[in-house]
Length: 93
Ligand SMILES: [Zn+2]
Image (tube, rainbow, N blue to C red; front, side):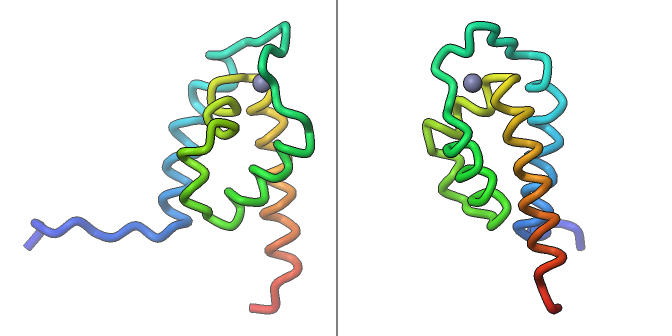
């Protein structure tokens, strides 16, 4: 009775990814020289896409950078939170 994988909702998937990512990234990739770092604009764009559960983001080189750079990741995380917050409050169920 338990052979079938339960389908994750996009939100569950994101939460899983986020937890995995968040554990390591915030300290695993110090980048004092900010080498190859994205502009704030790009980070905001990624936050918007991930807040919309855009799956294609996982193949995006910019996303790859953010998930391998602690400073960018912290910036992204702040944007992501505010994106989610504004979506929630702006939505009439
Ligand atoms: Zn960076």
